Image 1: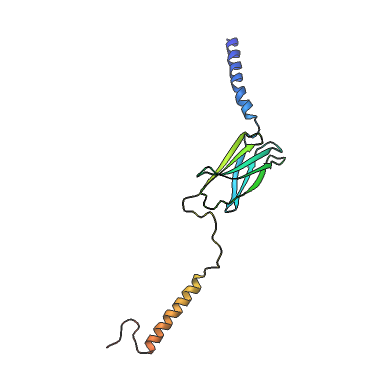
Image 2: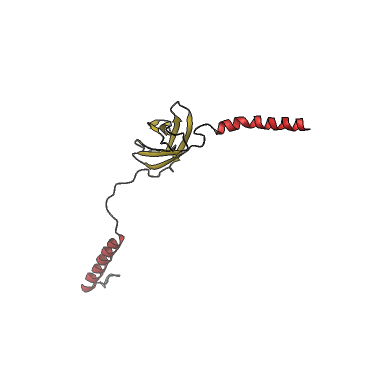
Amino acid sequence: MRRGLRALLAGVVLALLPAAALAQQPGRDAQFVLRDIDCKGVTVAGKGLPAKAVVRLTLVNRDNGRIIARRTVRARSNGRFSARLEAGTRDVLGLRVLVASSKGKRLGWVDHTLAKGALMCRLPFTGPFRPSLALVAASLLATGTLVVRRTRGQNAWWPGPM
């Protein structure tokens, strides 16, 4: 009975060794995020990488697969990085950033998708909109028209007797 239990325990340990080896691979728990997405590019941040690891970032248009920008960065000693990918992203609804090691091994990717018709780029600022000023001006104009029509003997709502 003990011999069978030992064999079973050894089998379980041997079965778990590959899973433990996979968990120890560098970059396995890495996380990536996109920030500051605008018409001039995106900012990519990551954590959970080995210290001083070299990472290749590739910005891809998901709609047609075209590569928009590439950049190589080095992680800090705490395994984090943040990099700005400068590229024209006007009229691009789907973005993907591929993250790979310096040897080309894929570490992960990050996607961003806009709704069709959504504005990626802000419109130019043309000045503040002041609805209260427009409302006051329209009210004064309407009041002035009524006063002028009444003082001339005309009814503002119905035409006078003919």
